[in-house]
Length: 193
Image (tube, helix red, strand yellow):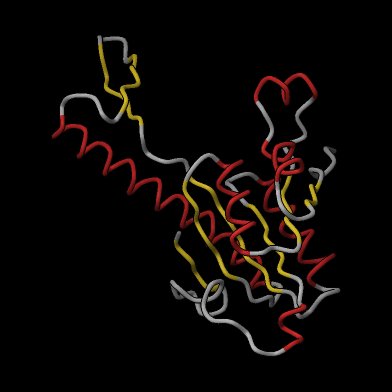
């Protein structure tokens, strides 16, 4: 789990640093905003900054992004560019380690960009925040992070999927509403014009 401070931009600052001794800090709201590469998640973060953090200036804000574990990768086959997913424990150890490492590096860079973009939004609004990348399935990884951080509120965006798509594809927000250890606020997407 990598952490970055929005104010200083330095890795390792923030969330699990040390215990705060003041009573005020102990009762302050710990807000976790889950973000991904979607505009909906950044809209939810902006909404939280404008409507929650503004009313709770002592709140602690943590931006969380979940990246999938690199446990599968693709091998090109045939002349048609079709890829077959092969479990990472399969043969070809030299290809496996090189391909998996390349994918991991690309994924980590993408995660850093997503968190940096979210922290820039916080910085623009002069709100100190910490960014964290967790690994695993988004639903479970965010749920575990919220519990580990003792969050008072989880905020995330909704893609606005219909009932059928949501049932078929699964919904991170639906899962978190039912399984997170704290209240969950799902911010609707901006209305289309």
